[in-house]
Image 1 (cartoon, one colour):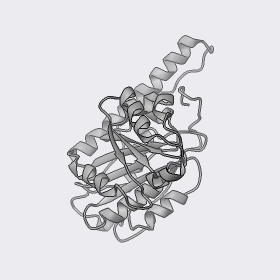
Image 2 (tube, rainbow, N blue to C red):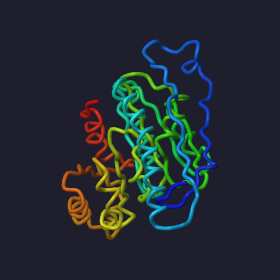
Image 3 (cartoon, rainbow, N blue to C red):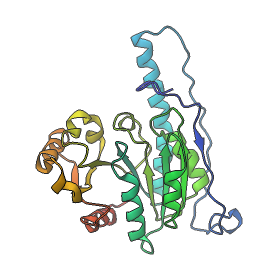
Length: 267
């Protein structure tokens, strides 16, 4: 159970990769590190009276356990020079469109992998696989975010190669994903111009946790009452160190700057 929002994790389902030559265990390349899960037992919160102190203790336990798995993930990423990015946003911000457009542009330049998080369906994973990039779907059921243990289990199936890039597309939600470290190099918050410029003020924890904010769908600016400068000012007010890119995954405007940002990240 997530004490931050009350969502349950009993219905989590981590999918399988479609069998291809590339993920045949007998034909795995030697530069692909074998990722296994060991050494940790889930901490089970005991149910007692519903007091504020107990709720705080449960939250500490949940986040403490999550951070243990996050450290495992982070160590794996660092040891194998994998750039892991946690893409977070509201539903409908254009995360998957941005991701597919990015993967097409990176084809032949960088080996990429994707972990997709949604409550139900494999729709987004299928869109990613259509680009030729391995994608593993995590369905969280009633859960509204991914956690580090889910990512760790997905990594064991995905087996990303060294010197690659891993995109983790989180469940559409600007609240709980801010609290859960997945072991990623950075959180990338994606904000669509259709959402309103005050989102950084309404959801400050997410924008404080993000290293980069992408303002997406700027091709729609002529048709909307969206103050781009004010949105940037609000984000800087919440997080003075946040980096900001403005782009359109549909028209391609600003995509080169996004790719340059990706290439500049050292792991």
